[in-house]
Length: 160
Image (tube, rainbow, N blue to C red; front, side, top):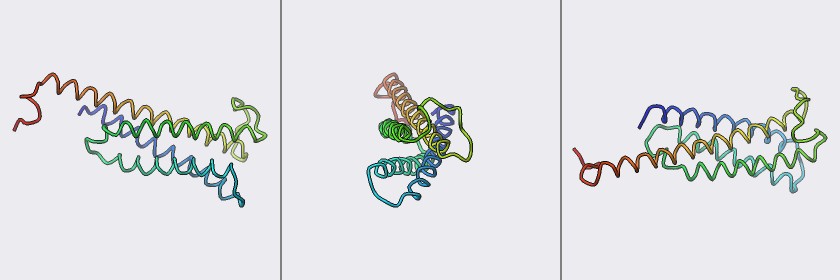
């Protein structure tokens, strides 16, 4: 396995863990502030579950072994789940008095809108890193398959 793809995979996994932890922390803060139950809380719990899965699977797949490239379907599914979480966060932002979705001009440290926009941004970054990781795994699997076909049946993995 080339060193570049292994290094890129490790960097992407570290990014997935970090982005998931940031989103989990921000959304967890807001879940802690709520006392009642309802629809917004269910959507936030979905985002927390996706963040927890991202952290767990990112840590597990950070362990260097060759099969980490063969889990690309899970990477793509998690990317789609993160895009859904991003949509949930964007939809929730429409209910807050923070301006439009693209209004990023009033970001500071003391504002709920700033925290919510940070969760939105890091959920999008997490979706992108999971998607790139899935595409990298797909490319690696395709490249290994092409190389195995080139070697032929008698010159495959059975050489001692």
